[in-house]
Image 1 (spheres, rainbow, N blue to C red):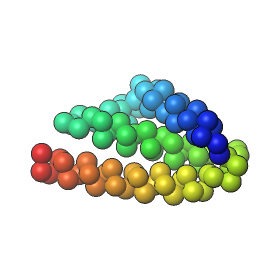
Image 2: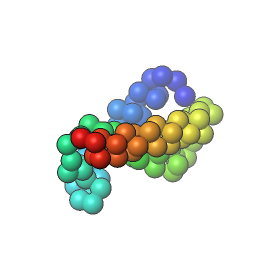
Image 3: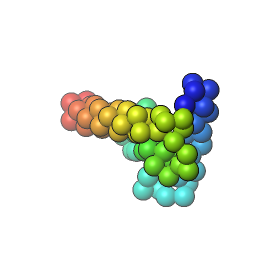
Image 4: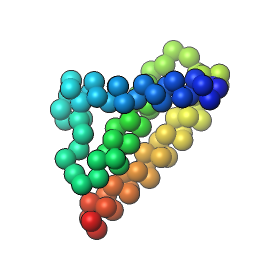
Length: 87
């Protein structure tokens, strides 16, 4: 996947996240003191879902992108949980 393709993919995430929030309030913006972490988590979840269901493999980069997104999601969740516990 070229940088341009990746940028185009990532550029769609805020739109997908907003659409999901409107369609399913359970997955909308979290009601917390760290909305940027929450939005990043939502965006990564959207990216993972998109990549998992994509018809193509983005020039062989899909698997690596999925691994990286999942790892980033794991770290963001841990950071969010820490901030929720420790303010």
